[in-house]
Amino acid sequence: MTASIQLRRAPEVQYLLRIADTNLILAQRLAEWCGHAPVLEEDIALANMALDLVGQSRALLTRAGELEGRGHDEDHLAFLRDERDYFNATLVELPRGDFAFTVLRNLFIATWSKLLWEKLLNSSDAEVAAIAGKAVKEVRYHQQHAADWVVRLADGTPESRRRVDAALDDAWRYTNELFGTDAVDEHAHTSGIGPRWANLQAPWLAEITAVFDEAGLALPKASGYQGTGTRGVHSEHMGRILTEMQHLQRSFPGGVW
Amino acid sequence: MSTVQNEWPLWEVFVRSKAGLDHKHCGSLHAADAKMAIQMGRDVYTRRQEGVSVWVVRSDQIVASDPGDKAMYFDPAEDKVYRHPTFYELPKSLDHM
Image 1 (cartoon, helix red, strand yellow):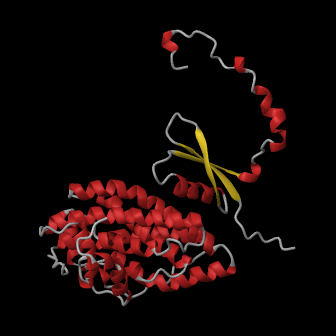
Image 2 (cartoon, each protein chain N blue to C red):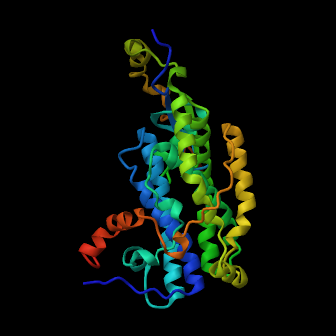
Image 3 (cartoon, each protein chain N blue to C red):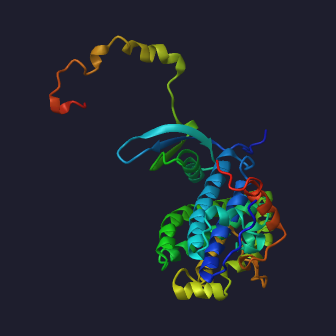
């Protein structure tokens, strides 16, 4: 019987887990499209991106485990934590919704992620900087792919436009969390492991605005809502996604292919 | 009759596996326009490191020979082995012609 692992919540560990978990949970959501995407080519594209995100997450989980210093590897961290020890942004744990919600969320996350990885290229942690070198190329494509779809759907039929508008209503308030500030974030900045997320907000807004201009979408009003996933406090959806994601490791502890 | 097209047009995809080699036809896909076709070509046909460059062309833009002309077009070459440059002695340094 393998019980849940107990995490040492050092700030540098938590900072890396925020990024790793945001990638991991979004990957899980994207993988839900496998066999269900509107067209076969898109099915493959979404699965490709999910696998890119799993790869980024694996590398970061491994590094976080090393810094944590309790012998936890990527599998322990991915599959044997309890919900409160996951630190992904709340946005990625929301149900996959329709295709419009999926591509809009991908645009928000990929743009954020690209800006973040570009900063992490200069991380004081050489391992993190090396991971960034590979990841930044992947997310540049994710961003372009998502941006193209947002423009197409927003500028498409009345139905596709209605769906983008609805997705924007649902997703927008969750983007605040991508720029949250706290002691973990400040520690990362001071130690040089990574940027303050708040520093990503201005360039993120500029890039989103450029896409929205092309799509004929207006930026919604700023929301006061602040997600709490990065502090380990999750929405009702998190338990279900973890149940599915952890099922094999919980049922067959240590099982391998 | 409705003029609304519900199906995306078909595109043929050509992938160059590495610099210096030619683009080879590897399949087809449906896409709304050229940019989407390139991206989907990338996603569908190069995800296992198959390529460094992708070409796409609308399938309806390709002019093909008529299968009915096969006998007239291609069979006459059958007995013209002398068209192959295999009857020349090549210098050793040109072994890989």
